[in-house]
Amino acid sequence: MMSAASINGVTIGYDDAGTSENALVLVHGHPFDRSMWRTQVGRISRQDLPAMLRAAQSISIHGAKTPSLQRVIDERERFERPGWRVIAPDLRGYGESSVIPGKTTLDVFAQDIATLLDQLNVREVVIGGLSMGGQIVMEFCRLYPERVRGILLAATSPKAETQEAKQNRVIMADRLLREGMEPYAEEVLPKMVAPRNLVALPAVAEHVRSMMRAAHPAGAAAALRGRAERPDYESTLAALDVPALIVVGDEDVFTTRADAERMHTLLKRSELVWMEGVGHMPNLEREVEFNEALTRFLDGILSAADLGRSEGTP
Picture 1 (cartoon, helix red, strand yellow):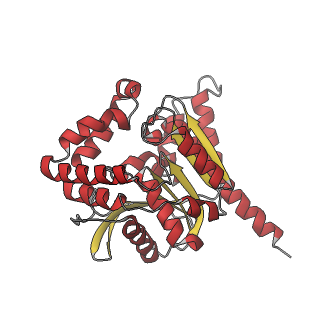
Picture 2 (cartoon, helix red, strand yellow):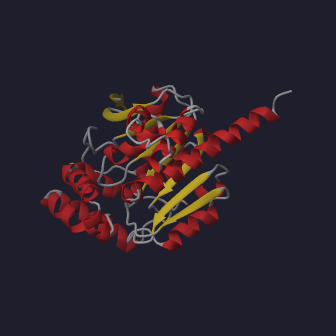
Picture 3 (cartoon, one colour):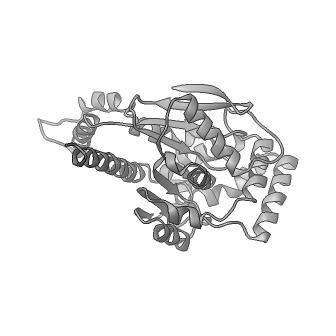
């Protein structure tokens, strides 16, 4: 369900689906919006299950369990287990949230998320993000480690910017203000989505293109300037003692295998999922595999919580 909240002087649009006490926050990257998570929001919050069950009526053939029907049966069993409330905000400057020109550092984004959670009466969360969203997750962990039950890091890196990269971000911010988002969107689309998937998955390509074109130049430029100043998060990750899922595509031109392995090494309780034939948008380019990995990860957190409660029972 789409909602809006007044937070730290700005309006933040967000989706809030599911009613569980277990909360998952999903943070989008640059220059996207919360719609990049729509299939994950539907699946993890179980909003998509009624449609799947209706579809099952046309799947069964002579009483046999076809693969599609078996998947629905598996989903029904999953539905009977404790679920998740999924919260996906539009970061300030993006989507349906307020546009604030100038510079927006990652701590501001993280503070917005924490304030939103306070307003929603949510204390502890599993928090995940892609690209810049993953770095905002790391900043959230730096500022609010006591609120984190687990993390998802997709197509991201913990490293601080080099001096050259900082300058390039500022140059790009100025360019977005001068030219608007359309030239940038066309230029970077083949870097966001693996070239083969631009052809094989035209709906995904169009979704990514449309998010980039719809982004407000002032909001995107402010984030670029702020992101250029981010700290190194390796010590933050090394200090975390929570489950972590790392997902990276082998055709991602922004996140390398070395980046993925480094995060895996730093995070003591992490799993690394390496996706072949995938660029910078694994949750869209390999939706089924991504959702399955995320579901297993979240189920593991619930199972560990159940075990902890049973061991603590007199």
